[in-house]
Image 1 (spheres, rainbow, N blue to C red):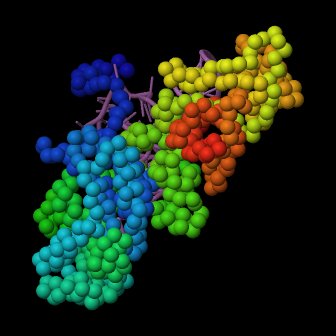
Image 2 (image 1 turned 135 degrees about the vertical axis):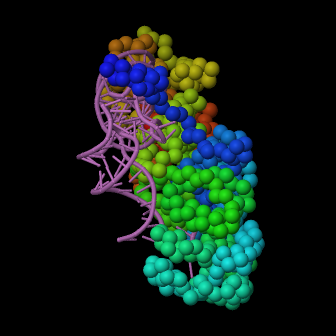
Image 3 (image 1 turned 90 degrees about the horizontal axis):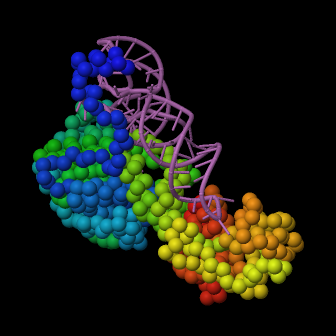
Length: 503
RNA sequence: GCUCCUGUGGUGUAGUUCGGUCCAUCAUACCGGGUUUUCAUCCCGGCGACCCGGGUUCAAAUCCCGGCAGGAGCACCA
């Protein structure tokens, strides 16, 4: 060590003062062009509401916007009417989910489908300039030529001819698949995916928002390229599966003399415990009746997390901590849950939920004066939250069948009891020894309850009773000795429906 | 097959640009202990990693070369 020190003094003295490594916290720095404001965008396909994976895009983009006092645009990339058709209800759901996750409204919301005129005009302009051309080859014919770096016969035609065919595409005189607009690139490009890539194609389907007004629709690479430029987007943060998209768009930008935004990528994320879910496949399963809806607790959707009681703050912290690596990763749900527990613990009041309740009669032998009112904190560490008051009444209580066994046990926050048959003899109000502590509830203060518990691909129901002290819909509770749950509904008859969150 | 990306403990992540107090950061998981009238929260301690092989160098997680492994794209989807 000293030897190293000596050498350092001679050769590299400043290395001696170097600080010991620290963990970088928060998002990495962005390369920012001198003073120009940062503009980002989050561009989902509204073929369904957001999944957990999407929430990464929301968090990263909105957090970068916050960090640099920039803007973030929510853009609906809804220019496909066929393979992943837009879902009418998804637009408003996504907008709301964006706000919920990020804690802010997007600075601008745009729908690609409502800006079609712009894309079509740009395309026509580019065709007449010879930057793009109309190709009449079939997809398979073109692929074959492309793979051998050969030009197809459409490539060399005059711009005027392309424009004419373009008009036919627009008017619907060419059938789907009969023509496509391509960006003229270099056929010698090593990456075959980039050679004369398709920019717009014909789709005669009805679009759920704008109807059948348009026969030609831009593909993502084209629509996004034009829109990013128009909106002055400075930074694109996207999945690395879109790397080729960046390259295609960069080629187009070069042809047009535009500057391509800085681009950052993240890798693929797999959530352990959830299979490979895509928005399309979830949508299909829901429509097929396998799930109750987008917020089915078994689904890795934002609406399901929200329903179950996850806090958006946990999601934000989680994704920020993960940062922007291009590694493909597998994440256990426990990582997110642990973040969430720490956040919601301080706001979650405690309640007793007794699964499979068994009624016991408290017996007071007269030596103790116990029947009556008892008072328990709503949160053990936060006295300001107040107390829950129970009235033992005649002494009827519930404990869980799982906790039942004859002998001595401590009823939490109350007394040591000796259980025999259906009675529980109060032995001591003070805690004596190290008796097992179980949770319980006075029948007087209880009401029927049912909790939805997702287990793998099944939904289980835990039936029981819950303490009826000030329970309200939408409240996140910590059930004593169990974990967190959300109150979903309270019926006319005071039956409480809960949904399980996590331990 | 072609093009591209990525390899740090069980899982993630910092450090890699510009080689040096790096026998490597932090979190989570796990193990042990403490606080607590919850199996929650909180606190303390422990465990455990630079994909492999060469090269350059006084010095390599970091630079170079070669392997290997995993992933993505090669859609008239996004």
